[in-house]
Length: 355
Length: 285
Image (cartoon, rainbow over all chains, first blue to last red; front, side, top):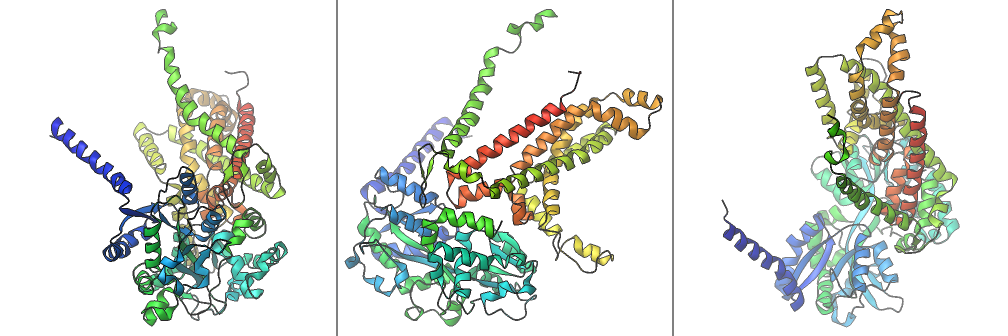
């Protein structure tokens, strides 16, 4: 039996421990870094943060973010009260651009960040006046996947999705903004994503995309649902994550991921700093550190993300690189489309594609 | 014994304040928030800001969402009708069995309620699949040439919804059906009615209220289902609840999601009102 005194002693110690992080925060000792809660956060806690702290002396307080745009809303409301629930956050592209429009991200001092030169242009984010506010953090590919028992030969082009023999055999993601099928269709049949810059162009692409509707058995929102169906051959073709498919194949599942000749979709998350953060210097050190090719290679090996820097700068072996990426030019999501015309695109998508 | 009827000695009246308070706190307040969000101003590329405008309701009033609403109501009405048609003879039969059998059957039915929609959806999609489903059995015994999938389809979706709704229908019907005086049926039979005539001419009309109750419960319950239509239905079977989820979670368009919810609720309330009017016992209280 715990007696009353022991209980009181234990709870007061607990209360002191709970209070401790706020003391650290006040003294500015720990940099709060937000990543998606779950797999990403666990991987960063295990493989990245300890060595960062060893190298730079900056402590990290790891924050789990919700996915979707809830975190953007929280950061925005907190910044109005001059609070930063996290100093540095990993943001999806649509949320990053919305934050940019709202001026939510702190401006960064490039002269203090030596490693950014290695990042390709699409992973260096600037305000309209040219000031840097963020960089690519991690990226991953959405590729053309097939069941190897049903398709002994790997398809070579996204055009395979449109072939009549694929009737009722495809699994595709159900939303315009997460499936990137508009970008895929535009690149495959219209020579690139430029056509999506006008409303007429978007409708033209949707009309082409609507032609494959009879082939789609499953418009999925839940990844697990499609992966299981792909592995059993129930739904033998579709779009899915390159890294997860490779992992399943390495475990003996009859699946393969193909980078089509038009390229696979390169989706990504980016580092940004809340303008309410009082630890801008440490945040810059962190973002600069994360851009190093060696750190990107470590992420590829341990987290399964594609490096944000060119391959030749990393020491990844052919097999390691192929597990997460490809040298082929990627299809880049047109995130601004979903920021500027998101409601219109989603309405037309419901009516013409999944309706 | 008359003193028992006096209000002071019964449960004190202020105790009604407690449910009233809870109802206000956990139902009316969130509902009020939903109403205010539904007329808020949607900021494209952002979130929403307080305001008063009908834009979200106007967006809903298009042929596209009219069709979605019709599909939602049609699917839920069909599921409710199937559940009641299956559950009523089942319950009548159950009530005629011995007490211990009844208890066991009810426990099994109640345990179905502990399964989540996700489990039911995934199980059914496996059961109706081409690679591992009943199509293989049909092919093996020669009913069909080759195994085929029965999901996604309207059939799969209704099967899932009925699986969810059936126990509720039985539970609503069980109490009134088990109180039914067997002598009433016997009297009908003695007077020359066939078994079928006694069932449809006497038992069904007597249980009209209970049948309406079961129908309404299953209808309202399945109207809110948003997982099964995604797992077991084709896009044409996606209910309004699926679209509400998409708008609220994926498009961050809470005003439109709230407006659709208000609409769905109003239509559901109207139908429930109509059904209870139709199901009211004429003459008998």
